[in-house]
Image 1 (cartoon, rainbow, N blue to C red):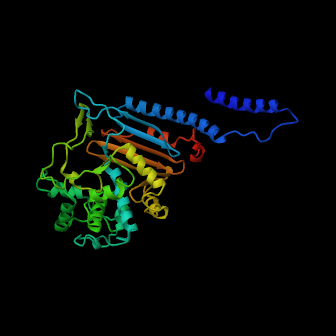
Image 2 (cartoon, rainbow, N blue to C red):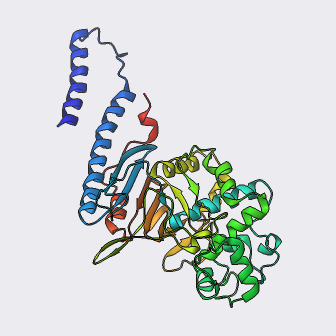
Image 3 (spheres, rainbow, N blue to C red):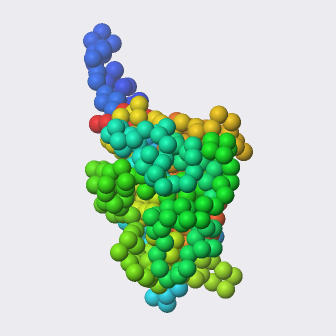
Length: 394
């Protein structure tokens, strides 16, 4: 109704202008601010798109969604909202907030990959370097940085190795402890280097160690100085247990992860494996993830020619119609979308970049409930499209 009224007012403006000038003296230089016209029409579409989002996520909340969501399109935030509680186990429930930081779990990988890309741009490493150039004690041959980025190293899982051989789980297990255990135990690899895709956290844990040894900085310091601070990700950080002698009962955060059982939610405790960085353990907010997305769009961290490497398929043959770049997943079911899931110790998350339609979604949850297909259906829905970015300029 509002749109019809607006269009009618524009038509009336033309009619009044025509008759007020007379037929002989019709002025062809009548000017209408088309930017404002498109801006107003865009505002209406934006409101409608936001209403669609609210319908989807409010319905998901009724079915157990506990988290924070941000959806943006054409360079602007369309919808952001927090649902549920920081701690589901306390009698005094503290509501989640938009700027709450969540553990990203495996969504941390896109940032670890970005760190490696920055070092490559600095000339301090090459994607096709043998990993042993930086970790010479590693007892495996023929593995390159690129293979780690694409999950094609064939290496064994470090968590299974640590569960079997780490003597005291009250003590943090670190990246350096992981490397030392690989040297001492020499577990059999799952396959030959570059022979197959096998998603494995050890790849990105080793990449974090490459960052440290190449930059001569702690991983958490490098990430802060080279990524978080330059693009104003003020709520983001790498959780470090570097100086901890013992594993704390809970992680020091306001937003606790929760395991969901039939009897109810249980607050997830800290874990000795949380001492390993690179594959997980980054904390961030939906707002900071949106800043990272904008930085990728505007090439604030790397030139476009270099940043594009992150979104190239790492395999010539797709595995179950899916592929993996540098810290980003891709799927034939969702062309031109790059995404990643996170799931670890009571947290789940999803980040989606739709480069074809300039859409972005970040969903951070502090429960282990599955993220339903309705989220993908919403992002993929092209029944209502916002105007391109340039039409929003006044």
